[in-house]
Image (cartoon, rainbow, N blue to C red; front, side, top):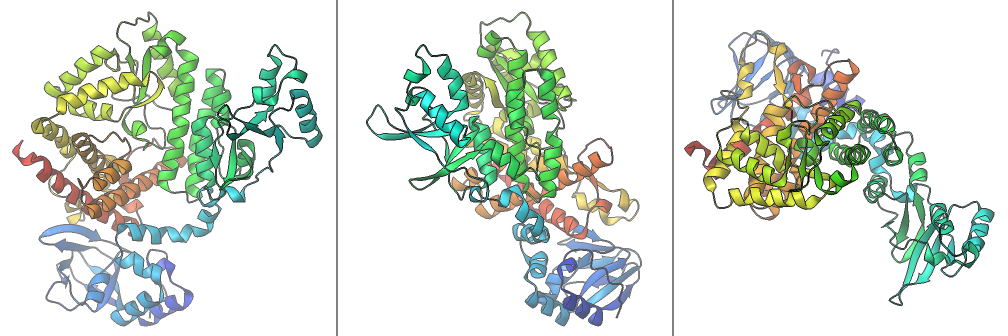
Length: 608
């Protein structure tokens, strides 16, 4: 039959040449007039339908859950099960390919990925969909182990070796570091490291280098990884601990030393890592140059098939170092010592990838005065804008006195937000709940957070009022109901944040608050809620998968917007989605709907 069958859409894009020929040989074409019931529970499903022209409405239990258009398919599960609970109706003139049951069963039996894309849960379908990128993902940073990188063989010296003799040995071997074997104050063996940086410190000692033992200047608080550690994790460890080298240990044996320079050289085809540039920046201009490379890093990692949660973690680490370094460059030392710089919202949770807007605040120690505080705040936010972080449209920044207060002022503001009538208060509380310290005295945030917990403690009504914000962006009926009419279908746009990630993020945030969970990341909160039996395990798994899918879809379309020179936003048109993406979006929305029903029951939101 038709040789023009479109194999460019999932799940048919994963078929082998022989399987594609089988489809072409057995597929037929069906015609349906407007209003025709294509499939209903009293009919025996015999074919999978792949739409060529027109639109078919899918209804379950009286509710519209999808509208299928050109290149969409439906009826696969029904054909295998031999029955259906759905009613499918032609909305206009429909022409569709009809793939017979026997062909479908043969494809399922012979192609596991095709089967997974048709029938598995969201997690397995996402995994199957990603297998098409295996060749790129294998080369990605996520797939490489430390053992695959260049590890320098260890060069050991005794702790009693004098500095001059050691430097001569390093010069002879063209090395810049040595491992130091020594005995610690407790009498136990220990291993340290001497680098050329330590030589600088040795020259400042009162003893001549020839009389100074290497144990006096070596560092013994070394960080270790194993040969099986993922290279990405090794990089994160270096960034987190602000070290340039880590030991590679296999059990009790020291395999060698992995340096950040060697690591960066190894993965230079994957990204432009900027951690060293941030650390070495001495001016705001230098820091801004480093920060502006992050979007390029994100694009390269995404193209390399790196998982969305991995990209988010790396970007969060780098952003934190940029914010902290900028604060040290701008804020006076006494202000740094008596304040706490926060990032909040998605940045605080470690879930903001591309730079969208700033959400930051400053808690100042009670009794401390800084005459130039307003000027410092202005320069900080302006410099962040120069780093590529746009100002917050809601003015949630240091420049706003509301987000720049002494601890006592923040406590009073939190009380007002919770007990007052300000319509923005629930969202302000939500943003503050995700605050994370990037510089300064973390105890100030701890005190403010403890005050907030005390306000909520024992008050189911206040918790319910906070949780009710999950309905803030809800629309009448289900979002898919808007697709039941054909007018403007191609213009339908879905807000990935308001209708997608926000209900998950805020609902989980409310449950975390109720159960005293301090974790900030949504996935980690979900995991902890499930481990405490506060969230059903299957729902927890589905929520995590839905969140990752929506974050990945948002990043994909944001990168496309950047490429086209458009402003980055959260709205995606249905016409821009492939068949599999639309199907996964439908599944994600069903999970979110189920979660919101759980929240309504759990917090008794209908009683508000």
